[in-house]
Image (cartoon, rainbow, N blue to C red; front, top):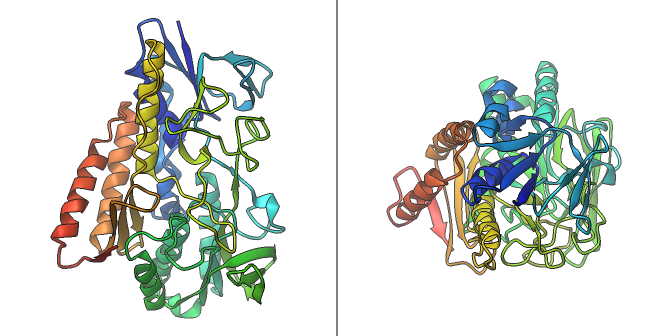
Length: 432
């Protein structure tokens, strides 16, 4: 008998558990360790933060579906991974032993690295659904007395899509409320240029995103390093390519949402041979740790080098499509190990991303996600907003049903490739 433990019950961890069930022998078992029994669809958090969704709309209680699939669900959070002892220590002092461990924790949100950043400071967050709810409450109060808005991402972020989405969604909602004319908006990002996305751009994302910001009267500052935040004011440095300070900016705000730096979670941070200095899990081409061959990792917690040198630290995003390829490869490779075989499947690391702008959006396809690419394409249109809604409904159904097959994602990828050759009238895009 082999015990396969999945650490994390988010997007990567939940799908990992579902996928792993199909690879088990009769005597094997899967255990999932999460912070609770509730799955939350984080891509919908920007909608929660403006009241377009409620928490209950994007949550799934995993208890019943895990039981149905014979997955052991542990809802006590993990305190520390001990790869030498092959155990996971839980917060209550108990231990879970494993034969194979898959780390799918996502990141820790490092608000503390920048004075005044985050919900305990002076900015809001949409990284977690509870934080998005708080952002909505603050937004409703803001709309009664509008003023400047500062949105974006701090240095060290490796997920820029939600920051762009939220800026455009808030713009859409402010226009619907007919108060947009009373709200100056500034987008702050460590990216070297708008639309970099941690991927050195995809297709024409630079022009598409810049055009969208201009059309919506949103100013921006790139190569930005957030120094500190105080009540109603953000202090940033605009940096030259050589790292020297080009200009200092003191940005006033009445409402601010900033994506924080990411780092590895405390349960793995500092474990020699397992993680890099930022706490992200080291993995080879098969998603297996080079030091501890019985440990695999999937999702945002995986260490991926940046696409190139930037003046301000910019991380590489792990999109949902990319994570699903990690999950499929990892499940197959562990299944092979259970049967005496060596890992032989590598994830594709392709990216298909739908970025909703409230009344439109941008889609990009990167194959592979990191350049140079075989496919490098981006496009925009009102249809993207509808596609994002459809994807949300589909994915939540998939989680509730306990299925992991990325049928819709594969179908969408094929449709987007066709659209690249025969774009619809309302779509604009440019192949890279």
